[in-house]
Image 1 (cartoon, rainbow, N blue to C red):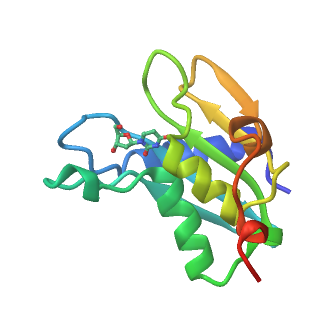
Image 2 (cartoon, rainbow, N blue to C red; image 1 turned 180 degrees about the vertical axis):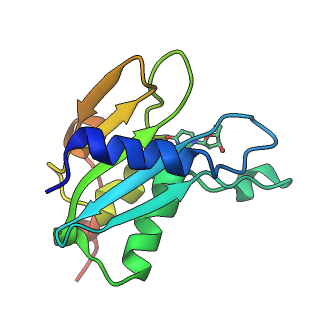
Length: 134
Ligand code: THU
């Protein structure tokens, strides 16, 4: 299986493809699957600002579009270039909570500093599919 460091490198590569002319804040994401594939994403902004997409949502949505599902997602790396590693926004926490397992390692890095966390920590006491009426 790919190491955290290798997955982070892939995310830094994806970060180069960020389309962020409004914020100039470039984010990359790499999702590792059980069959050792890596699905990449970058943030893609829009002149209508709320229509922009975050890197981690792009990568996870791409993985699902390829047919991967929750149990296939083994690790998520997210890279950025601010003073501290960017934490996923609230909307992305909810997306990760839906699409990846609660204890999947989420690795955040800005090269100077690397933090490892989980969605269980980032989004405690959350709402999910099992809370909907059946
Ligand atoms: N952004 C991400 O892509 N992921 C994060 O975890 C934090 C924020 C993007 C959204 C927007 O394009 C830019 O960073 C500035 O907020």
